[in-house]
Image (tube, rainbow, N blue to C red):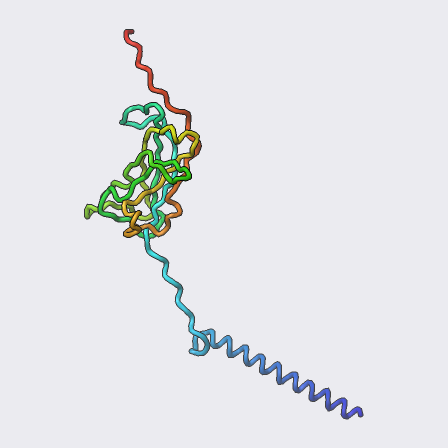
Length: 198
């Protein structure tokens, strides 16, 4: 009986050794296959990063005067803005009118434009309107706030001349094309004339 038990134990140990050895061999083959010896699945090259410009409206602020321009009138506001290119290629277009910054308010019926200003006016060596990647331009837009905009928040929106057709808009991320403005300051009163005389 003792011999039978011993034989069973020896057989069991031998079987366990065979299982462990086969597992170790399988792991070794998998590791070698991953080292590029031709065995195993080929690895895919990483997808290239899309190359495109990404214009967006950056810093904005209400201002009480615009240097070199007439004083603000009754119910008129002026807003400075920054348009930046967060993409990885330059933004290039043929015409200054292709990109604008619009001052708007929205209602249930949609957006109403109050005023518009060209967004990019710099030209490259070929005479094209251009904004290099990681660069920005600044500007100002001013307009009279109509009575129907009373109590509504204003916003600045980057507008493309071709946006109705969706053709030729070179902007890979339009999510940053709208900048809500903070509550606007009180209406600007018409300036009183300077006293005459002394």
